[in-house]
Length: 100
View 1 (cartoon, one colour):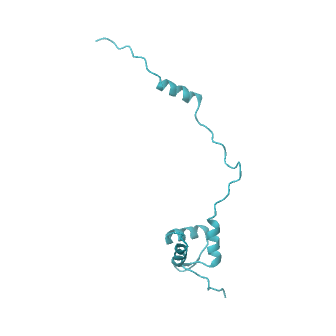
View 2 (tube, helix red, strand yellow):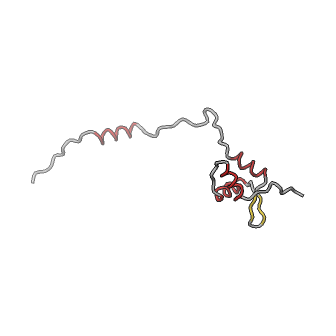
View 3 (cartoon, rainbow, N blue to C red):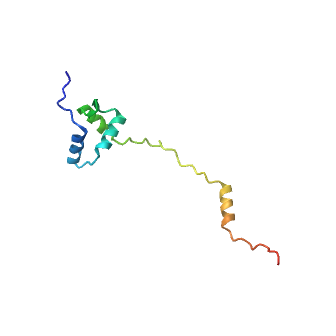
């Protein structure tokens, strides 16, 4: 029979986090646990076992980026765009208006 000694409810876990200075809502905790599948549920009651809490905390670690992983930014600005901008910004010559 599994040991349920370490079982804890989302509300109690939120209170433990708050005691450590980590402020998170119960709703956010439940949503994140569902995304990761790191929870237990019986009927409508959700609870966590120590390994679920470990999985939640491990999932919060930022993923390190490997050097060169991000692609260099590519400009979408073309020479034609530059020419259009210069034309738009240069002073306009007065138009010949017909006399009345």
